[in-house]
Image (cartoon, rainbow, N blue to C red; front, side):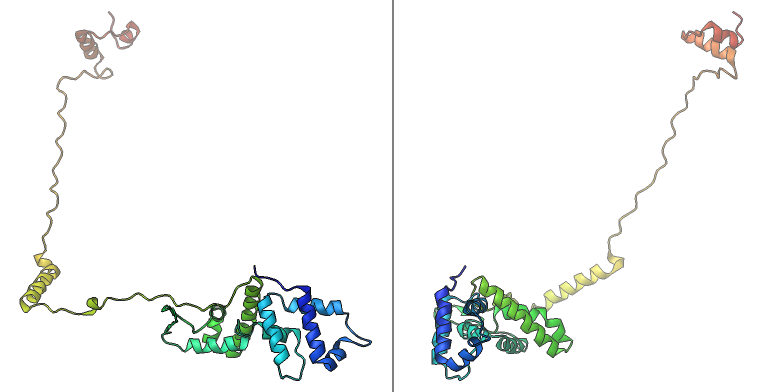
Length: 261
């Protein structure tokens, strides 16, 4: 977080306004309907939220050297403090409109040799993105009003967090190697050979046809030659087969099958 203004800073501002614009100050803040000075200081503090001490001192210097005959409001004094650090909404809108006309933004080279884009600020670009659809619809007046509203809110939030205005940096484009753009022609013989190979691939008659799998019938399992007689159709033969193989058949079942033994 950045440094905040002290109560003495607010009193210095009020003293400067009372000294330079005595008539207007007395008319607004003194007399029967005078606003309590504590209320005036509180109102000044609200308008100067986010202003750093360095910005405040610069605004105070501009106030003393200003040739304007009219006393600025606290909101106007705020603009004097941060005017050099942040674009005002009108300037941000003009810069945003100019940015939309750029086909290819170009970076500038700084003193240390690095390159930086300085066509639009980060907050102005962010606000511009929010109203881009409105601009595309041709509703420029509505787009401007919405842009200014958003931009003021973004700047106020950034100042409260102690951030400084920064430039929006374009994403680096993928560079294509120069060698990849140079076409090296091949000889006629190689080109003819490649053409013939392509024709062979496209010609269906020249393609290798995979033979289908040959289907063979499965061999039927051999039927058992020695099988037992059916106990219901030929009970006597069934019992003989049981006796021959040593299979014991209970007497009750034998009698039911007609064996009288």
